[in-house]
Length: 81
Image (cartoon, rainbow, N blue to C red; front, side, top):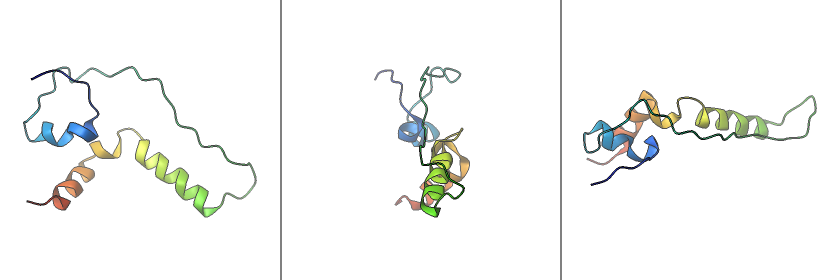
């Protein structure tokens, strides 16, 4: 037994299934971080660069994909029973 500060992509399923209990649900860890994509400026961004940027936006947007209801359904359906 203990207290931990873990990302929801690690413990989200355990919380949903009742194995873990959030103690401070309103608490947000103070993490000042950012993700930047640097590329050479021109009028045309290659498809590979655009797809990378779109993937990063989708993955690290708020809320993160692992907290969305769609991700929960995908995870549940892909897990063996």
